[in-house]
Image (cartoon, rainbow, N blue to C red; front, side, top):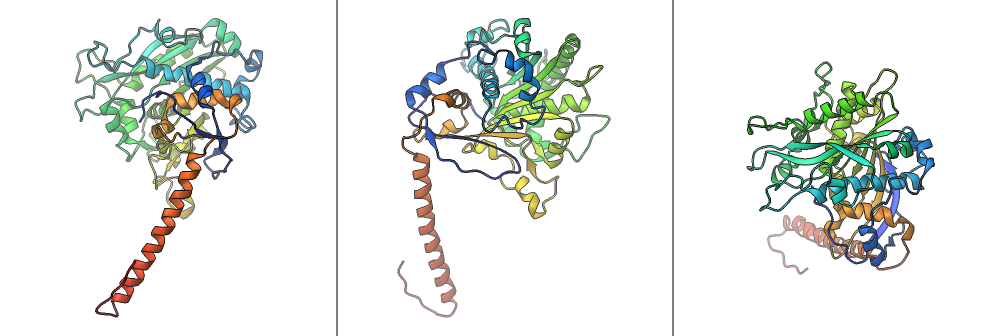
Length: 427
């Protein structure tokens, strides 16, 4: 569904507000990030994962991870939460930067770097995480590109960073859509039962068939040496890490952009449904940070995620079309008109809504790097500039009014023609 970072262009209309799936859009006066500040933010990486929060994060980490559904933290945006959203966003962006798109490279469609070097090579050497495993996903083999492709990694906070964070954080980071088979999976938008728990299949819990295919598909029949399915790799590795650190405070953080956020949510649901996040005394909290993510499942999927305490913070640009899909028409808004829960795609979690657009680069609305840069620029945003989006909206409204008049005129003439054999008219 998207590739990462394009170069920053000129002025961007930006605003920030929050909502849950129940809330309506709240309009705000747009503000503009100065181009030079935007470009600077795009280049800067956090020097420390908790540089500006210190001991504060260690004392409130459960709230920051969504224990109270981010009540009182999202609007106004809490600076500690903001820093965490930026930090995890940068760790997701590294997946794009490390993905090899050079057809002449022996690592084409795989990671450019070894596990020990990836974060250093992408400018995140001081992030304080050690990668324990790479993750591969297999798309539908309908375009000759269905083999297992590198899609992200599992990483664990180092001892030093674990002390600062207040817990041992296990991170799973996913990139978004790049390969042809992944694009094909995105188009498989029909709902299908998830059935991830063999002891409780819950047929009413349904998810998008394309995302489920990427999550559960294996290339074992196509390759001599198979990675197994994305699901098999992740469940095995996360279960191992939970057991390894069972004596410590822990958190499971699943972060992804676009299609990657869908895989992160499926993983969170899967872990909680199977109880793999449970230890002797309590469950390890599961938090999903979704950047520009689509809808994943139906109403019952959302309800089950809520029951299982899978916390989801959706960072969304309201002008990003991907966040409206799938279920452009059959979505949660139709519930009030009597649509059944199984028919409607429904977003999960709490939404942190951004609003940005570039007249010279419309594709930026789904760019992962722009999401992160905007959040970094929050303190250096200044009012002013040209509201290109507002101007476009005014022109569009005017054109629609003209077309409406034209349609009414044509309808009148068609109705009149039934009573007259010949009509002369001029529009």
